[in-house]
Length: 528
Image 1 (tube, rainbow, N blue to C red):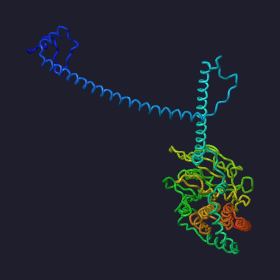
Image 2 (cartoon, rainbow, N blue to C red):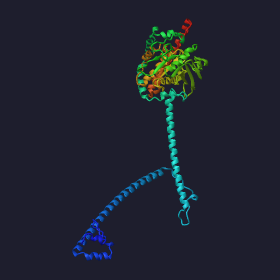
Image 3 (cartoon, rainbow, N blue to C red):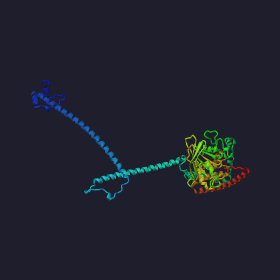
Image 4 (cartoon, helix red, strand yellow):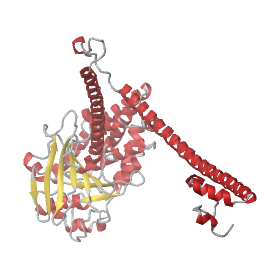
């Protein structure tokens, strides 16, 4: 066979032996087989069979690969469908549970039921109407749930606002009045501690010789404290700005202004540790004849950050009234008042009532060239007349007011003040009673003698009379009686308080007679 024979007859010879016999014509076939020898014909047939089997093998391999790839895609698609089906199932369960929690729809009347065709099947309009009803019910349920959430949030906001109002009451002069003083005793959380302490204290002060010997010796030790006038240089220099020349103020703890060396006001800052760490000031009223003294009072309030003042005075409805309306309005303005260096604005006045035992005046005290507007609340305690003991019929009110001195919601760096006309006898006795109550709260038996000496050593003239000294016991015992639940112990306390009140009243009358005789002789009387 000569070279190029297959190309001459039109037979396509390829490297991969792919023979395309189906494209041959009959003349080409005759020419091919006439020129081929038998051996060559056998070889060609074998080659054809081999190439055909090879082609089939390749084709099967390609089909298997394609099939495996298709199987993988199908598996992935089935897995994705399963996940999607699971999510839709869980979502439908949540929707069904939410629908079950919603309020059930009311049954409609037969006239508003589903419309049916003559064959008995629901009509298209009825089916669409039922869908609309379902949407309405769902929307209604969502709206009701939204309204319920809104009501809950409103209640929470209201509670939060009430709490913030209570906390911020000490900073908001226009807020609601402070809680009742006597409620402080009722709301105390340590009644058991107070009762246990009172029982221990009663073992000492309940003895027979307590009235005749112990009280008298304690007061004599207090009255023996004398004042060194060399330690009262500022008082001697500014005596014209004071109410009395017989009530001194020590240089060591007198109130200072804002770095002003010439500032003076008759008031003392007391260190009462370890009983309490709160700053307490005992002060007297300003001199009405001196505008500088009135201005200095409000400057002291601003400089010392005084947020609460207890003003002890007699009742306006009795002969014990110390200030007329004009003088009272001068000390405590009813409206806006401006001095040279400070402005005072009365923001609110809460009158005395059954709910509020003491009248309260709320002031903004703003020094000039100062952006801040600190406030001060002045509580008018009209139960303690000058040169007398507190009104016995109002002892519970007095004890409650004393208990509020160290329970007031004032800032940590702020202070409170107790004042009267002379700022000595009554404020000192009231403060000792408040400190004794603080000791009872802490579970410590109060030693009235030591507390009184602590106060008197820092404020000359504090607790001026024997009857005032006995009043400190009465204030603390009334507070203790409020917390005692044991009937026998309460009866003992009641008897002891009654004896002290009788003894104090008798002593007060003797002191008034002595003051009258002394006033007749000397022509002066400065008892507070």
